[in-house]
Image 1: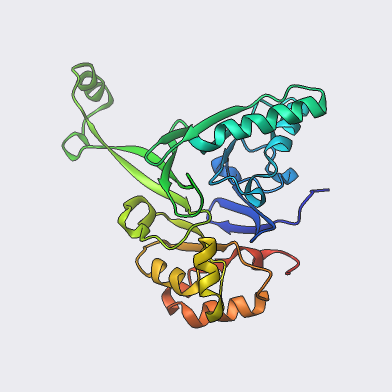
Image 2: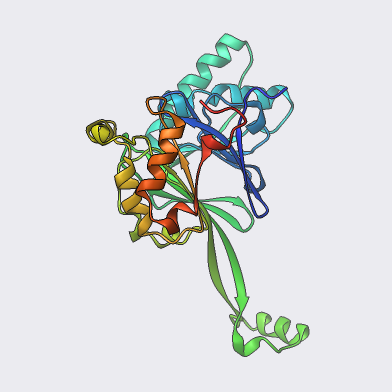
Length: 284
């Protein structure tokens, strides 16, 4: 039996599974891309995923690191790769070493420190691009981008042997282009992410919106989270086809959250949006 009752969202040939409640746990996985954004308490369903993209070190987002790595080792899987802000790598090593001593077995890991502007290859044509957020020291978000090549118009009608010959001569016969598939903001204050084209044009945006009541604007600012009014302002500037809202709060009932979203977002954006936690079999 799975350890968690995770929400599930299907978008074309991609599935998004996860759980995200502020202060409790956040884990959002996309198995077909082989990535998991944050690890939460490491639900069983994400253990087979090879790449954990950690945005920051708060416990509700990172508590399951050691269990994820240990359980993969126990099941005979290769060490998982954890991308994390550079300032977190040493503390994560300390945690893994401490759990190795407690467990009595070495826990292997592939830890990769990242900073804004870095790019990490997930698959031959799939890359994670790192960008800065405003939450805790060193916090980051990730865009997963597919890189392709398209043959130049002037070479489109050439035969296979002709193309091979041009390549031997060093002729550049194609143009590279990128397809932003998904962007995960993680926890963050309002930032005008429309300045980053790969975020603006990501097919899927996974973004936090923690606070929904007018009297909670100062709470949002103090915790460096987004309020619904800021969230609405942000997404109006973006061109995403699908918007998944995470990090909802237990302070506000789900029914009220859904009602507030409908009243605050434009009709166009509302029709593209879904609250992750509304897609569970049981609501909080």
